[in-house]
Each structure stands twice: as structure tokens, then as C-alpha cells.
Image 1 (cartoon, rainbow, N blue to C red):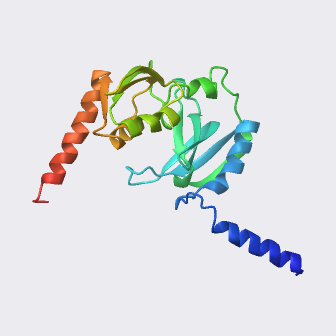
Image 2: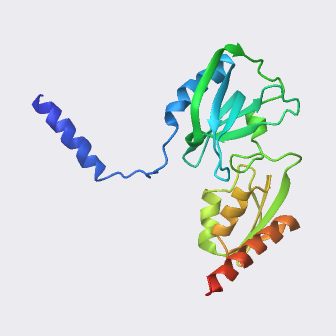
Length: 219
């Protein structure tokens, strides 16, 4: 070890006191990115065991992988099931995948109708819903939150349609997923859903359910 090595080492340690990255405790499954990426590139089928959060047992999956996607520090593989004519795609979190096997002897033809950019153009989060996306209209009251949303829009489709001293109106074209509901709830009570009605009612119900539990002193 040279004197220079010590200087470099000290410099790195010093910078750790100046720069702090966001830390996530959930980095499981990162070792699967490389073999899954190879399977997507070479069009190999993959098999694995999977256990969702709501499942009690692991399920065997036989997947034709089409895309790797990151969402909030978690990685997912998106694909279609072998022999499924519905053309539906499914997302699986890498941290819940076990016993991954890349079937190099069993290829598949990449579907001509799947385009990753178009597929997730109106998605909010990792899951994409069927049908057409909704025109979601929001009203934001707090000025600090308004500034935050200008610099950190909910979605790439977000537009500011009106602003005055009292509020700012936003419009985005997305599927109203639970992830979207969760992010709207983060800013309550300084945000209001103007439309669609179904999203407004879902948000209101979640707020009321949460309030009921907070006020329930018997449980």
C-alpha cells in the first residue's frame, strides 16, 4: 500500500460525510437482473417459484420475459405466460422470485404488439390496467405543495390547467391504480380529486376508514 492509497482512502471516507444517498433495506433480487436481462435479449423462457404478499404458498411460473422495470427502488420482470392468448402481461417483483431457471433450450417469439414505452405510457406504478386511461383532475391548495408538484409531477402527462391565489388545478391521463391513490393520500388534506368520481370516492373511503380506525379506542 502506498501513501497515495491512503490519501485516496481518506478522501473517499471524507466524502461519505458530505454526500448521503437514500438507503433502502430492500435490495433482494438484484442478482437476478443479469440472467433475466439475458433472457429478455435472447428471448428465452424462464421458470421460477413466486410468493406474493397475499399468498400463503409459492406458485410455479412459466414466463416469457419482455421487460425489466424499476419502480421506487424495487425491480420487476414483466412478461406473458406461455400459451396465453389473452395477450395480458404480468409483473413479478424480483425480491419474491426463488429458484430462477433460464430455459436456454426453449425460446419464444417476442410479441409484435408489445412496446414497452407505449405499454407504460399511462401507467402509474408497476401495474397497468386494461382499457383506456382516465383523465384525472386534481386541485392542490397549499402553495408549498404546488411548488413541489411543479418540479415533481405525478406523471409525465401532467399539465397545469389553472392557477390562482387559492389553488392550482392539475390534469393527468393515467390508470387510477392503488399507487396513484396512495400518492394522492400523501398530500391530503391539501389536495382534492375533481374527477373521475370513482377515484374521488375511493380516496374518500380510504380517508374515512383510516379516521374510523384512528378514533377506535377499543382495538
